[in-house]
Length: 505
Image (cartoon, rainbow, N blue to C red; front, side, top):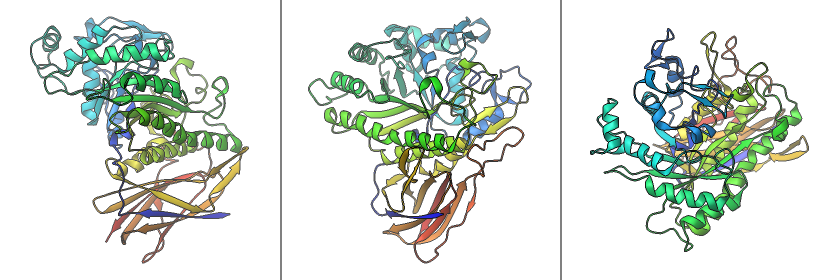
C-alpha cells in the first residue's frame, strides 16, 4: 500500500532562524565515549591529531558540529576542573563513580577539550560542578578561561602555556540537580542557580550564556520555579541572571527497568517508540508556555541538552558504559526530534544529542580493538539535516492519508520540517510507518522550483545497522523527485528519512 500526503509550504513566509546549535553534540566522560573513542593519547600508534582519533574527528566534521557539551552529564557534578589542567603526567586520578566506577586519569581536561572543539570548529559548552563543587570553584574556572588581564587564575592559565583567554559562551549551571546532581528541590536549586550565575562573571568583552539546569521531561513545576526565581515580578528584568534553561528527555519503548534491546524489537515496539518520540513536541511546547508567562519577549532560551534513545546495553559490555547499537529505528527517532526542533526554533535555541561516540544514540561507534570507526544511521540523519543550520524555518502543512496505527497507538505517519536560505528550500521528511510507503507531494507556494534533488536513508529491515563488517549497510542514497513543471513528489520507503533540496527560479 502507498499512502498519499500533500505538504503545503509557503516559501515566501519565513519564520524563526533554525539555530545551528540545535544540532549540538555531547561528549561525557562515560564509557569509551571520550577515552578510546575520541581520545587515544599523544603517544598512541593510532592516527591522531593532538591525541584525538583523526578518523573520528574527520567524521564528526562532516556534520558541521556547532557545539559540544562537556564533561557531563552526571560526571560534571563530580568533576573538579583543577584536576584537569597543567601537565598531564602530574594530574591526579579519580574514580568515575557514576559510570562504571572506573579510574579517570584526567588526561582529557580543559585544554584538551577546547582543542577538540577547535578541531571540530565547534563552540564549547561547559557544564560546571554544582552538585559537589562550589561557587568559588566555578567562578575561578570562568576566570581561568576567559579573563584577559591579571588575576591568580589568569596567571595560572599563562603558567600552563596559554597567554590569550579562550572565548567560552555557553556555561551550564550544573546538571540534573533533581537527580544525580544533588537530589535538590526546585526552589532550592533555583536559589543556587541565581547564586552561581552571579559569580560566573563576564570578564572584559566576554559575554557568557548561562544555562540553568532545567526539568526532567514533563516536570513543568521545575520550569515554573526557575522562571519565577529569575522573573520575580512576573517579567524578566533588564538582564536575566541566566540566559538559558535546560530540559532533558529520552525516548524509550518501555519503562526504565525494561528498556529493551537496540536491535531485537518487534513492529509493536517500533510503533510505541515512534509515538514516544513524537511526544517531545508537546513536552517542549508546554515548557515554552510556562516560560512565556514570565518571559513573553523570549529573552531566555530553552535548551534540550540531553535527548535520544536509551536501550539496554549491548551484551557483554559494561552496564555503566551505556554502549548501544543504532538502527533505522534510532534514525527515525532522530529525524522526528530534529523536525520538532526546527518547528520550535523561536524559543528552542540549543539541543545536544546523547552522545557523540560510543554512548547511547551515538553518531559514531568506534571498535577499540580494530580501530574501525562506523557511522550510525543517526549520523546520516544529522548529516542530511545539516542544510537547515542557520536557515529560516518554513511552516509545513500536511494533509491527506496521514494517520497510521499499530502497537496500540495512532500517529501521523509523516514527520516534516522545512527551511529556506540563499534561494533554496530544504524539506526534511520521515515516513514513520514501518510497513507502508508514502508518496509526498510538495506544494511550494510563493516560489517556482527550478531544480530539485533528494536523498533518502532506508533499509530492508527495521533493525538494520552498520558494523565494522558492513559499515555502509545503511547509508543515504539518491531519491527520485518527480513532477518537473508542477508540484514535486517523492515516494518514501517504509521507515525512512529523506531530505529534498529545491532551487527556486
